[in-house]
Structures are given as structure tokens and as C-alpha cells.
Image 1 (cartoon, rainbow, N blue to C red):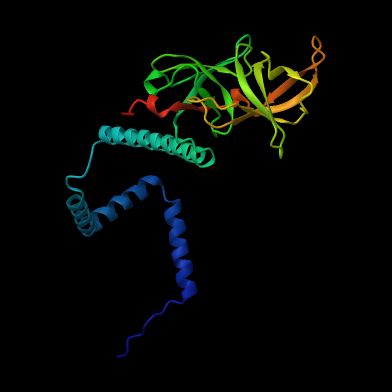
Image 2 (image 1 turned 180 degrees about the vertical axis):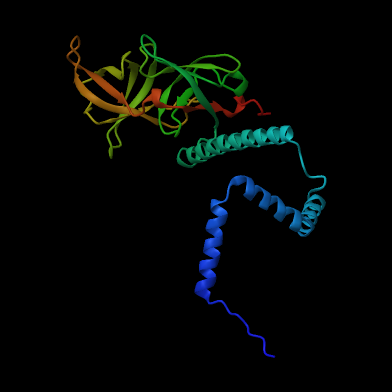
Length: 276
């Protein structure tokens, strides 16, 4: 006798499964929890085989290499600190490499010094986090972070801190050279800070052809600065009120010293701590 086979159409099968899903969705939670536990109890032997194999494999691979949470936290913090120190050293290296490429000074070393604080008012100063332990001494030139201009002069030092008097401080006097771009002739003068935002070069003869826009350089000084470095530009050139035959010249620095986060101090090689 032939057996009649019943075949469900795909549409009917889809509707049947959809209705079953809705029924399970609408069932109370206590019933679905029982169904869940029933499924686990039925298929747990099969599921345990996979878990046991994977866990054993993981323990075998990681044996002797695991750390507890406290040790992991310590290692993570140590890694982050080393990464930050590496980034700081890399930035210092880039600054030094650029400076030596643009302004080679074989006679001197350079000490990069972070600026820790500044003073404005009657005094114009920076406090930098380097001192005699790093080869700094009074009278050394302090340059911008890029190493392409003079900001001031080291005034006082301790073991790990130094006080820098900026060129705009009224107590600072510096020998300078005034030169026009494209011209070979230069004029020698003495520049002092005006106690505000600029500097002055007084008492130069009006026979000197000095005009607004001329560039002012710090004059070379043996053992301190072997090559001239730019300081600023002449922004006002007029006759001195008390001495009409002389110029009164106002200079604007090319760098805002108070905007510097790091400065470079030109230190003679013999002053460096590790120099034999």
C-alpha cells in the first residue's frame, strides 16, 4: 500500500514559524524561563564539550603569562609614563636638530628649558626649570624655542631653576647691530628695554642712515654668542628730544617671550655637566 507524503509549502512553513515565534514572545516570563532551563539541561552535555576544549586550550596557551588586576594597572601606568617621556624627548630632539641645521654653533651646547612661570610689571622675567646642574650660568643668552632669535639673558641660577631677564626689561642692556635687508653696512649700538613691550636704541648719530623696518641683531660675544641672531625691527626712528643731533630708535622684538613654553639656552661646551 502506498504511503501518502505530506509536504508543507514554503509559505505555510513561514507562517507556522512566525506564529510560533509570536506565541513564544507573548508567553509569560515564568514559562519562558522554564523553557530556557529545559533547553540547557537537554543540550548542556554537547555545549560543555566546546567550552571545555576552548578553556583548556586557552589555559595551555596563557599559562605563566597572566597577571592580576593590580599588576596590570601598574604596568599600564608605567607604559603610559614612558610613552609620555618618549614624546617629550622626541620633541626636544626635533627642536635641537632643527636649531643645529639652521644655526650651527659648534662651540656651544644647547640646553632646552621649560618655562615654569613669568613675571610682568616692573620686571620682565621668565623662570625656567634648568639651572647650574645643567650647565647654566649668569650672562648666557636665552633663545626662542626655534633657536632663531634672542629673548633675554640668564640673570640668576640655582641648582635646578634660573631667572631670565627679558630684553624688554629696563635693566637689560645689549650690544646690537642694525642692518638693512640686502645691505652690507651695519651700525653698532646699545639697546635697552623700555620696561613695557619693546626696546630702545638711543644716542646714535643722525648721520647714520637708519630707517623704520631695519633689522636689529644681537652682536656676537666670544664665549656667549658666536654668531649674530635677530632681536627685532626698528618701528620708530626719530630725533632725540634732548639731543636733536642723535636718533631715538624704538625696537619691537620679533618674538613674544611670554608665549614661549620652552626656551633654549646657549651654553659653552665646557660648561655642560658631562663634558670631560
